[in-house]
Length: 434
Ligand SMILES: NC(=O)c1ccc[n+]([C@@H]2O[C@H](COP(=O)([O-])OP(=O)(O)OC[C@H]3O[C@@H](n4cnc5c(N)ncnc54)[C@H](O)[C@@H]3O)[C@@H](O)[C@H]2O)c1
Ligand SMILES: N[C@H](CO)Cc1c[nH]c[nH+]1
Ligand SMILES: [Zn+2]
Image (cartoon, rainbow, N blue to C red):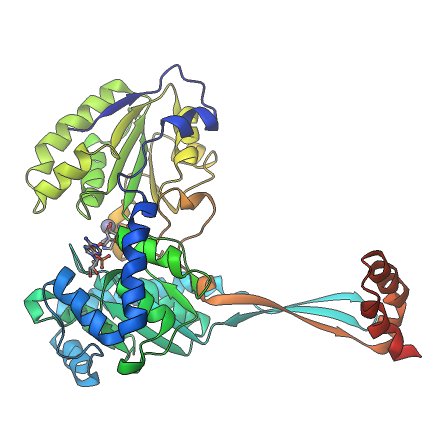
């Protein structure tokens, strides 16, 4: 079912693996052309364009793009008790693990009368994207909103695609999750158009632009986030799901197969990779995949994702080579299912989130571990973190020098300002002592 890449005997250098690493089928740059046009339509024609896009992509426009407050309250009341309890538990756990992401202000005494304070300032207004195309993601409401609230963002707008089966309204469980978190500004809009609307605002529905847009989505959402970056901040481009499992002969092939399938379930373009030093284990996983894949609800989507170019079983010489491959790939999710996972963990540099051992599957992190499931894809884990309170915070330095402290560095400032041929800079200091 999955294609095999045999890297045994290949020198485990980053360059060698980067040449051989399969990347997701559709490049985000290809989707940028489409996304650019959709954003342009929303900027120029506002709500009319959003309604047209809803008809075209979501199968129906909402009665009102801004969701009435009463609908959010009703959705909270209508939540199934088990779903409500699970959302509440997720909120508590994510809040707990997110609290450590807000550093206290820190003061550095540079010398007598001279201090620099570093403080962490939240953005005023954030836009949260909650996907809702092939699946709906109430869990992503929690993963977006909790970090924004922990960071201290005072104004939050949430966007999620209109749902055909609910007459173009936002999915009720998404509304219920938003209501549980006290979010009352929700818009029924999806894809690139929604990202454009959050970034630039839409006057005719009273949507003010936001300073940061976060949240996962498909390739068009990721492309749109790349396009509006600069107008707004973004978290990472948390696009089409990826899972990479490093496993050896000691792992349970059934668990590994189930985990590869679980993430393939998101999207035909999802990437599921197994990297192993054991061809015999790879064969066992293949057999389990055959046994399990057909029995899942979204079997066709799963088969397409697993059989796609972006998914593979990668054979390597040893676990050090497996870690080197994974570092070159920079997966969104990395699972370590080996006899000594901590030894492999010590070799890992690049991953959105790392799941250690046989009882920490990615699905745990998707919903309830307490960690955040909005994670970088497309190799961005090599330089971007997952979503967290810090995604809504900016470090700011606050500078205080008294007169004597300024006097001690005045000559140095003059020297540097002369060296840069910017003498007015020096004079702005010396004028204070004339
Ligand atoms: N990386 C992460 O943290 C993370 C987390 C959860 C989900 N995901 C991923 O998010 C994605 C969710 O995708 P989804 O489709 O279910 O929901 P989505 O909300 O991301 O996408 C649906 C929207 O895409 C747009 N769209 C659909 N077809 C289009 C086309 N042909 N041209 C232009 N725009 C189009 C429409 O506007 C539609 O409303 C999946 O790929 C999943 O793997 C990633
Ligand atoms: N695995 C997704 C991140 O790529 C998150 C998610 C939400 N619901 C289920 N899974
Ligand atoms: Zn998932």
